[in-house]
Image 1: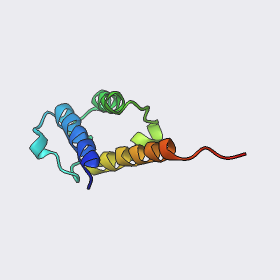
Image 2: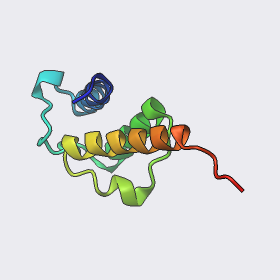
Image 3: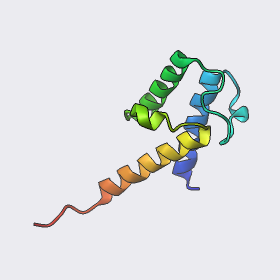
Length: 93
């Protein structure tokens, strides 16, 4: 795991812990992301992720967040795609 991915992990865990009302030490990759949250809390959690990572998370993508690890992998993949696009050479005509 790279330092950048570790940062993503820390950010996701911090936000999840804050919204679940637990310590970051209690947040593991296999912990249910929406544990003890009602629908409004879930919406607030998703908005916190959107604010933190500067992206919009489509409802269909958010529905795939079953565990904290799912969210971590999602944001890691988004970061990798963004980096790949940023470093791609423009098409030659």
